[in-house]
Structure formats: structure tokens, C-alpha cells
Length: 146
Image (cartoon, rainbow, N blue to C red; front, side):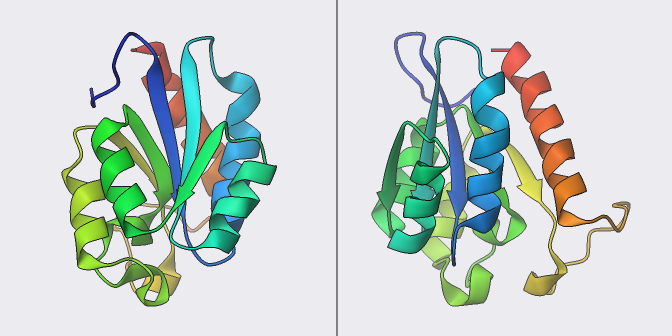
């Protein structure tokens, strides 16, 4: 897994724009995390970070350097698929951010979105709430392996 130190496992939620997807992920994940898991958030902008903090993330940060730094330290990363695409999320994701997230050793659970112009073969066309539910279920499986 990623670079968490001292036995404490880091779950990182990433988002941009208004932080709606990230906030929903934080709300769904928070009650399911076992003791010893830290729920962090990083937004591409202050609005996204604020939304995720209000939803219950333990700590949050904003911007390119925060994404790069925290992606390297995470054990599990969740967020919209645009976080691994250079210029994703309407240009909020820099190439350096995308490289840091996609290159992280952390397990990544990504929410599909056709708004980024990416269609993933084999995924069902679901409502966002169903994708989020499935992402949290997958995260729970990954966390049980910590």
C-alpha cells in the first residue's frame, strides 16, 4: 500500500469544482472507517475542500502541491475519474496532479463520469448515488485488507 506511517492508514478523498462527489464520499465513508484510519481530503479549490471538511473529513488541504503530497502518502484514494486526467474536471486538474494520483501506490477507487469525455467499457450506466454506494463498498473491501 501507499506511504502511511506508524500503523495509521490514510484514506484520501479528492475532488474539484464544488466538492459534491467528495463530500458525499466522506459522508458515506466516515461511519464505516475502522479505528486507526484517518480520513483526509484534498480539493483542487477551496470550495471543494470546504465541502469535504463540512462532510466530516479529519483534515483537508487545497491545491496542486497538496494533491501531490497527499497522494504519495495515501493508502486508499477515492474521487472522480477526472482526478487522474491531465486537465480533468474542467481544467482544475493539472498534469502534475494527474500524474501524482495515477502514479501513487495507493489503491484507487474512482467514480466514472461522462462529463470528462471518458466512457469506461464494462461499466453500467448508473445514477451517481449508485456509483458512490459501490465506491464505498469497494473501499470497505480494500480497508479490510489494511
